[in-house]
Image 1 (cartoon, protein in one colour):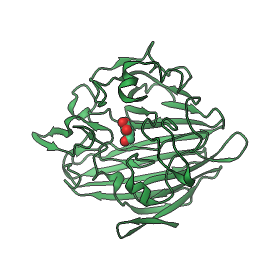
Image 2 (tube, rainbow, N blue to C red):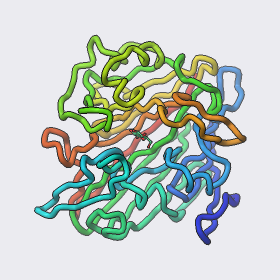
Image 3 (cartoon, protein in one colour):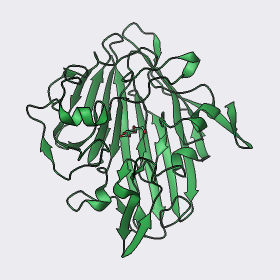
Length: 340
Ligand code: BGC
């Protein structure tokens, strides 16, 4: 464990975990954040495949959510408002008139505690008091990062509440499989096992509610295609949000959700999740960020594959809702496995 800087008067730390077969990670309790993820490339050299900063102060200052555990609600809620059990809850409007990633009091910006740690795993925990981030219910959350023997980073979430609430966590890692500082990811090859995605109403990225067939659109990644192939095609949906920033309807009959290959490193990342959606976000707004080791991150120099319930599900009847009822357990796992 190393010191990682200060959050107010509190000291944040970096914790290292190691897998048996050449995968390592560093994490911090601020936002239960993944700071570094080291995997071997085709030449056996270690590559750090996630964007991040050198000290916790930079995480506190910035709004990109590099590697963070985002919740209690990941993604957007339209008009920052929803009704649950007849009561209307208003959230912070931090993204136009909408709420994004739970606002400034979200759990990505809090100090979690380390509940346990061993060689290849670490568990962060937090008690999120009712209404401290505007959501009802005291929520007890744990997130466990495990590096498995087959070189997967497995992220397991567990939460309970004492009042009905929303519970929708994601990990917001920005991956560049050529190295976190290797520039554009346009030549990364991508597969997403999804026949449909949820298009947006406009540039504010709230879904229309429709499930749109990907066939014949730049959103079709069922066969391997580079990320750059159609990103500049002028498709209205891509123009709205400056690239890919859309939720896919996962085809759960397939063995995995997504597979990405770094063109230079040969590193392949395979993602799995038990959640219904995944946000493909091509890091459209990270230009100008100075990251680890002075890296100058560029727009579309990484990609996020954020597992989730669909954006704005709470206000959209035909989307599966992320409501966690009192007495229920939120228990979900997302993993990213690496090989060459
Ligand atoms: C959202 C983007 C947003 C990014 C960083 C992603 O999950 O979909 O619209 O810019 O997070 O906040």
